[in-house]
Image (cartoon, rainbow, N blue to C red; front, side, top):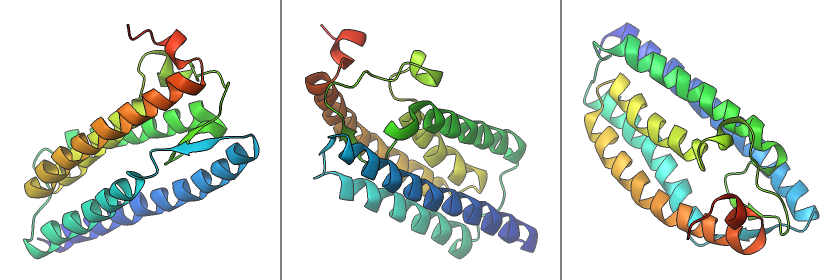
Length: 182
């Protein structure tokens, strides 16, 4: 891997990891506010899987790119554009949920489901963004093993998470009325 590719990879990883740390701070702040309003956590038993998945993803990505000496994809302009678009989707999702956004499934009984921003058209836009990132970021640096393995693992975790989240939302909010599932 050339010096320019290594520098670009390190810049991208530092930016993305810094973004995640800021998001954890926001999530912690939002969690405190929501719990003061009476929120409870659903799916706490699978949350460590999500944390492990994301930590493992970055470790795998760094190992594959640096140790196997992967280089920047010849498709990098397209992939980088898609990644930047996903980041805009991430911010849009986060801002649209406001204080309700979190990395955990926090349910505020009696709350109305957010129906603004991307949530007008799709139930879980942030999960779509995460799936896109887990696929695109490794492909940007030709880390095909990481892209494949973690896309599959993320898909499995999301099936679990979304079912738990939707069940909890249907039981405690107007989610079932907004999204008819019968």
